[in-house]
Amino acid sequence: MTKLRLAIVGAGPAGIYAADILLKAEREFDVSIDLFEQLPAPYGLVRYGVAPDHPRIKGIITALREVLDSGEIRLFGNVTYGRDITLDDLKKHYNAVIFATGAMRDSDLDIPGIDLKGSYGAAEFVSWFDGHPDVPRTWPLEAESVAVIGNGNVALDVSRILAKHADDLLPTEIPDNVYEILKSSPVTDVHVFGRRGPAQVKFTPLELRELGELNDVDMIVYDEDFDYDEGSRAAIASNKQVMVIDRVLQKWREREVGQASRRLHLHFYAKPLEIVSDDEGAVAAIRYERTEPDGEGGVRGTGDIREIPIQALYRAVGYFGSPLDEIPFDKKHGVIPNHEGQVLRKGDNERMYGVYATGWIKRGPVGLIGHTKSDAMETIKHVINDQGNWWVPADPSEESVENLLKSRGVEYTNLDGWHNLDAHELSLGDQRGRTRVKVVPRDEMVQISNPK
Image (cartoon, rainbow, N blue to C red; front, side, top):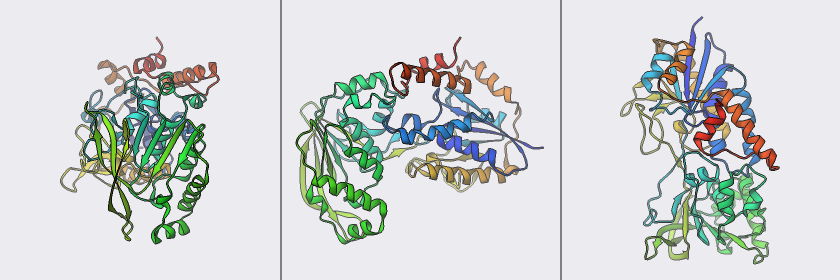
């Protein structure tokens, strides 16, 4: 019987779901799947892109763990595509490869002053407070007044972590270094800016409600933002999610404020124009224009220019994919060019046989886990049907990849190693009455995974 040797680059939800769907699919061939992950631990954005106080979302890991622990997939962690293993290597040892590398960079925001000292991307901040091994251990939380640009869930995550008291994060898996720095933060005010109205936001009701549950934090909304136009009223009446969001915000309008030590302000109809500098080239204020509905689903400027003093800024306007060696890349959209997951050569519609994509690197950073599963199903359908276009590997033996990595001195981790690290982190948490304490340094993660 024919055997498919498949490599998947990226061990986040997209890669793991793709593996699971292929294993469960009706097919006329055997399957052998190897997952390659540049970090020593699996789960990608679920481990390093979800705020530590989101245990419900992190419950996704339980489902991912079941797939990995099925015994039908091999994991090679701490292996970087393009450095430790190349496309030529994959062609020698596999019939095909699926890239599921996600989107971890911040999208650009083209306004004056966005690169000033004290201006940061949300993705980098999220990686820091989630204990990503490849970002600095420290973070300059020195501002009393902070701006966050964006009206999606990431903007709310960033705002919540900035405003939340560090002790309220202790029950979570927050790394020790992150707790200590958040504990010393002098922040009093966090301002969130979105250029459209409350009925057009991109965050979910759950995320919004969580903001209102913060201890010793006043939620500040402004009456001028709730003079709804016909389009907004129609959205509230016809869309349950928008209706719930409006209900939450209306309750906040009725709250008494002024007693808390910190405040989280939501500014709608506010289009950022410029980040104002002080004499030393650091963030000093945000200048924005009030907008209004244009009657066609968008907004237009009103000419009302305002300014709020701040000392730090976070842009949360979306994630962006990163290019991969020898793989076409769409610089405008931050994705691999593809047709339903079949990778296309740059500049034309010619197929790049044997090469596929799934997840955010395929379609961009939109949608939730359900979209990731449907993405993977679409891609796997083509992998199965493209049998006539698979590569013919020179050495498809399973031990050949292990031998290759060892010959290059790559200290890779495997599934047993992840179990070692997982147990160690849970033990650290148990000692302190917490769920988990993450190990942050990469070399320490590898050492715990692969004890001598």
